[in-house]
Image (cartoon, rainbow, N blue to C red; front, side, top):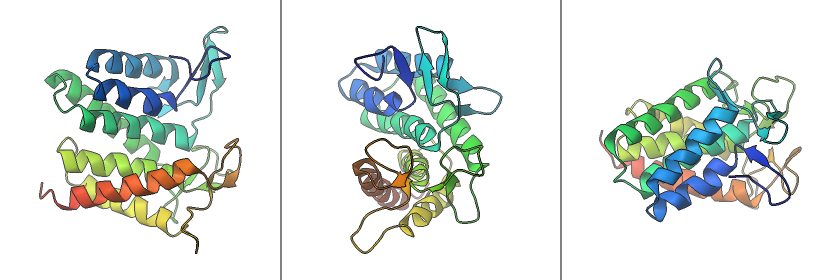
Length: 211
């Protein structure tokens, strides 16, 4: 599926926007097909990371850089889909879970001493961005809570949420995220606020799962 109505571009964001909905409505096959299509166009098997955008008409990447939030949308979208449709066929569920772990592991190579990530993962000059940590933390903790990631991911997920939590200001806003409306620089966003709540709900669920 294309992300916008006025063009034929495949975005990493769409994995989160579409795949959980398909899973929730009982369409596991199309959900998996969307993951496969996005993976074919955007995923770099050498680095384990996703590019931000693909242009279907030109047959090439439109934004080849590994946007941190985009990679977060991918793993969070798959994790939420696995949670919303627990009756996925066994091999398919295992394949998607393994892919989440692959991308999580690839992203963690770019985590800094502050626990956060550059907005573009492989660009050390990019601003330090907090929502990537929330999305990755949500995915890791959901995998632990639902039993498809090893318990060792619990501490990683909790640390990621804690790092983002240090960016919450006195008004309860997660600051220093890829900011609305254009997501081109640091700011705040409704998406980051939602991811903060989702991440902490996943942390509570994972804490109750003894592994």
